[in-house]
Image (cartoon, rainbow, N blue to C red; front, top):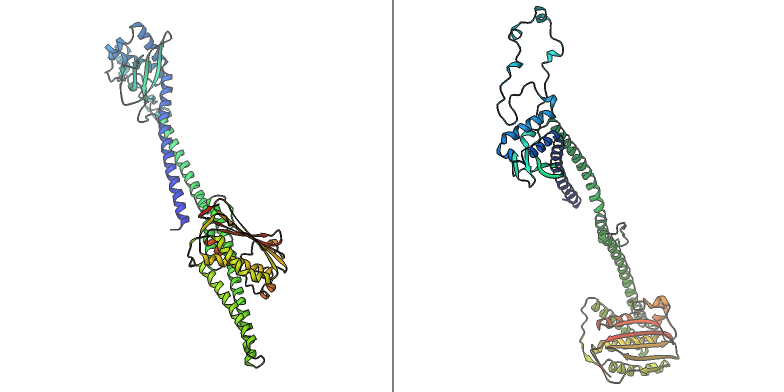
Amino acid sequence: MKLHYKFFMAFILNSLLIMGLLIGTLQFFVYRNFSDYVNRVELSKLNNLVTALKEAYVKHDRWDSFRKDPRRWNDIVFFNLMKNHPKSLPAERNSDISGRPPPPRDERHRPPRDERQRPPPRDERRRPPPRDERRGPPRHAPLDPLQIGRRLSLFDAKMDHVAGRRSRHEPHTFREIMVNGNTVGWLGLDIPKEVYHPLALEYIKTQNHAFYIIGCGIMALSVFLSFLISGRLLRPVRQLAKGTKALSSFRFDTKIEVRAKDELGKLAEDFNRMAETLKKYEEMRQQWISDISHELRTPLTIMRGRIEAVLDGIRELGEDTMVSLHSDVLRLGKLVDDLHLLSQADSRNLHIMKASMNPAECLGDTIDNFRTMLDSHEISLQTDITSEGRIIMEADRDHLGRLFSNLLENTLRYTDSPGVLKIHTAHKENRLTVCFEDSAPGVPDNALERIFDRLYRVDKSGSRKLGGSGLGLSICKQIVENHNGTIQADHSPSGGLLITVEFPLTYSHS
C-alpha cells in the first residue's frame, strides 16, 4: 500500500474514533441533562404539593405522621396531582397512584332508574350522529404521563428517607421544602432510566437524528480534508523520490522547491545541498581527469618528439639528449608518485608511520638540503626556529620532510630573483606554528581559497614552464590533515605568499 493511502486511512480512522466518542458523549449528556431538566420543570409545578407538605409538617410536628402512615403520603400526592392536572381528570378514577381500590360510589350521583332505561325517541335513533360524535368520545390526557406519583420521595433535612419510593441506585432531582426560612425537607424525583412522555421521546428522536446528520457531515468533511492533507504532506516526499531518481541518472542540477519550514522542508533543503555538492564533485572529477591527461600528455609528447628526432637522424643520441630524456622521465615519475600519494590518501590507504619526534629538527634538516638551491636562485633565507626546550609530536618523519620540501620548492619556482624567504616557528599551549613567508609575486584574492586544490595553478602557462604540476600544495594539505593539523594561505607582508601550518604537540617544555 502506498504511503499516501496509509496516511489517508490513518486520518479517517482517527476521525471515526473522535466522531464516535463525541456523538456518544453528547447523546449521554443530552439524555441525562434532558431528564434532569424535565424533572426540574415538573418539580416546579408541584407548588400545591409543597404547600401541603409544609402544612402537614407544621400541623403534625415534623414528618412523623408520614413515617407512621405511608398511606397518608399516597393520598396527599394523588390529590395534589389532580389539582395540577384538572383537565386530565376523568369523571371517575378506578384507582389512585398507589394501587389502592377506589372508594364506593355515592348513590346520590347515580341517575334515576327511569332515565337510565328510557329508550331514545325514534327520530333521534334514525338521525345520524353529528360529525364530531362519530369519532368517539373525547380522549382525556393521562393523569400522570411521566409517572411522577410513583417516582416522588420525601426526605428530611438530613436527606434521610421519610416516605415514597426509595432507590439507592438511582439519582434524584430535589426541591427544597422551607418553613419559616429553614430547610425542613426535600422533595425528590428520581431520574428515570427511560423516557415515557411522547413529547420527550420525540425530542430525543429529533436530537439523535440531528446527531446522525452532523456525524455524516463531519465524516464527509473528514474524508475530503484527509485526502487533501495526506496529499499535501507527501508532496515533498514525492519530490524527493523524483529528485533521487534524477541524481541516479547523473542529473546533478536537480533542485526541489522548498515551501514548508518543517522537517520535510529541512530535508528538501539538505537534498538541494547534497545535489549541489555532487554537482561540484562531478565538475571537479571531470576537471581532474582532463588535467591529469594533460599533465601526462605533455612530458610524453616531449619525450616522443625527442626520440623520433633521434630515430629520424635529426638529432644525435648524445649526452645532452640522454640528460634531457632523463629529466623528462624524472618529471613524469614525480607526477605519477604524487598522483599515487593522493589516491592513497583519498582511499584512506596512505601508510603513515608515526613516532615521537622533534619537528623543528626535521625542518632544520630540510632547510639545510635547500640552502644551495636557494643561493643559486638569489633568494636570501631568514630563519627563526625555536630551539629552546623540547618539542615533541607524533608524526611520520618522511611525510613531514616532504611537506617542508614542497613548500621550499614552491618558493624556488615562483619567487622572483632576488627574493626573500622567511621561516619562523612558535609554540603555545601544545600547538606548534610554522610560517613560510616569501616575497613577490603574490597571488590574487580569489586564488587563496583554491590554492590547495589539486592541479590548480594561478598562472598555468608559467607554472608548466617552471615544471609545476599543481599537486605540491594539495599534497601538503593532505599531509597536514593526516597529522591532525591545519594549513592556510594568506598574503605575505613581503609581497608574496604566506603559508601557515599548525600542528598539535604531545609534549612541549621551554
